[in-house]
Structure formats: C-alpha cells, structure tokens
Image (tube, rainbow, N blue to C red; front, side, top):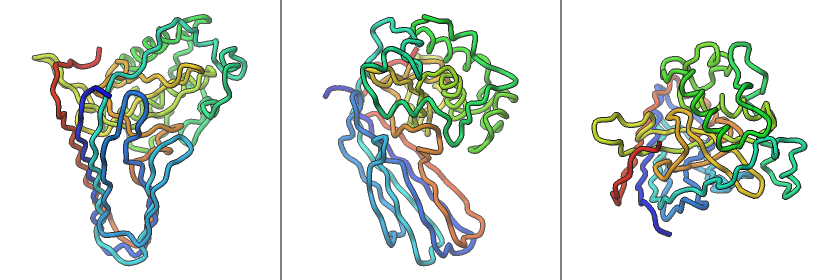
Length: 300
C-alpha cells in the first residue's frame, strides 16, 4: 500500500492531588485500519501497570482498551505510539441523491441491511430535536446529489459557527452551541450529524488527528497536531464518506482516523470512574510527524 507515512504520539497524563484508591478505565486511542489507512505498528503503554487489562474491538470496529486499578496511585499516564500509512479515501463518483438512501424507505437500502442503520437515530449526546435558533433544512432539496449536499452543509456550518475553544466544554448541550453560534470541532461534527439524521441520513462521529502543510504564507488548518473530529455519512453500497466542517473541506490523506461512533460519547479517547484522587490535573500532548514529505497542500 503506497501513501504517506506518519508517526503519531498521544500522551495523556492525570496527576491527582491525593492518591486515587481505585479506578475503572476505557480507552479508545489505537487508530483503526480500513481502506485508505493502514496501522503498521503501535504500542499502548499504561503507567503504573494496571491490575487488569483487556484489549478488544467494539461493535463498530474500533480498537478498545479496558483497564483497572485496585491499589492507590497518584498519577496515571497513557501513551500511544503508532505508525500509519495513509492514502486517499475512496470518493463518491456518482450523483446519488441524498433521499435515495434516507431512512426508513430509501431505495438504496434494498442493497444491504447493515449496522449503519442505527446511525440515523438519536444517541447519548444527540437527541435530534430541531434547534429553535438554526437549522439546515433549506439545503435538503429533494433529489439533490449527496456530494453537493455535504459540501453545502459543511460550508454553511463553517460560515455560521465561529471556532472558539472557550465557548464550549466537552459536555456542553448542543442547543447551547446553536445559540452561541460558536464551538470547536466536536461541536461542529455534532451539528452536521444532527441535521443529517433529522432528515433520515445515517451519519457518524469520527475522531482522529489532522496534519497540514499549508501553502506558503497561509496559516495551518485548525486542529493541526492535536486531536480532531469530523463527520461521515454512510451510503449503502458505497461505504463511509468523510467531511470536515471545522476546516470546510472533504477529509483527505492528512486526516488520521482513530475511531468512529454515533457521537463523541462512543469514542472518547479515555474515560472512567475513580474512587479518591481529589482534584485531577490533566495534561495531553499530541505529535503528528510525517516520515515522508511529498508536496501536499492543505485540503481544499
């Protein structure tokens, strides 16, 4: 498989103000392999050594790590190191209309019956209620080609919502994001998914990273060398296709994909429950390094 080779390092460190007595943890950090991305090597190290650990794959094909501690510890460090070979994702080549595969009755669903059907329903973070302050209803014209629709939806979210890391937190309700017209990549992906699902189009949340080599004199895309998120739409017979509303572009070879699920709750990099620990100080470091450097500009 030819493509661009990347080395990825993602360090998560928690330091507790008092010893944590016990904890149960779930990680979703190891990138997945699929057409367009090959995970060639990786290590996921945990310090201190957990008392129990299990690595497994979830319903959606994401790599998971469950681990727990039953003894006191003052710090938790989880380090992912991976090597990825990335090539362009397959593109939608035909002019399939979005309403040909809207659920429940789109004719394209006669081709297959897949897990993707559940990506049209409400999920933990996305109740699918129509916002009182903004919607993309006008974009969903009957017969409109799906590629044209997704380009337009991505552009409208990018134009209507400001990127502001101080506007929201991880669990800020989506209606508040609509009202503020501001947020981060997680929020913009959730908005797109909500608007698509409300119209019967199966859409999922994608977590990953973004490395960019911008044209000379231009700023790097938001999300460079950091965790990033966008959305994907499933077209029966044609698979998943990805768009990035934060940067108003289709997902390209410079997007490195970790996992996908119904919303952020399905693919949070690390979450868990803790007994003791007091206040926790969190530090996250992400490095994306290109091993081969062909001339590739930022995605259009």
